[in-house]
Amino acid sequence: MNSQLKQPLVLTAIGATLAVAVVYAAVPLFSIPLFGFGYGWEYVATFFKIGKYLEMVPFLMPFIGLAGTAATLVTKSRGAHVLSISFAALPLMFFGYFVYMIASYPQGEILGAGMEKISILSTLSWSVWACLALSLAAFAVAVANVYKENKNK
Image 1 (cartoon, helix red, strand yellow):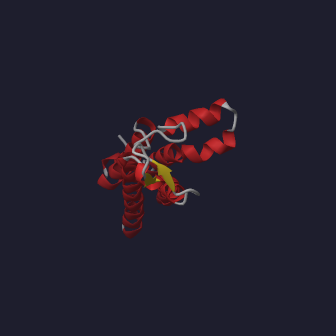
Image 2 (cartoon, helix red, strand yellow):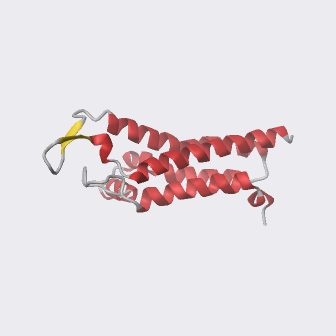
């Protein structure tokens, strides 16, 4: 067994990025149906179906972040661990930008079921906030792991 997999920081970073990818793919992103998409995998599937592969790439960032973080953290190379910070930043950038774009949506408000105006930001499901928090945690743990590795150098 790889000795890196015995380190708590490595396991925590990989676990957090795995949780982000699972929640993103399997839990609705909005509390009410909007835009015809509910789950992260639906964004990817739609772009794949219509052949817009470059537009699909940003929606793959949580999965790319998971794969890259896991691959770089299980290596024994300190240089590769520095890359883990970049990979762990991908889901964080994706969800940060996702929330920013929703918050700055041009109309800013939509009509709710009772015909009152509600902020589109309030339609985000708990899953988006959980992914944002988990992404931030994974990024912080990846940074801490690299710092620890360099300190032990």
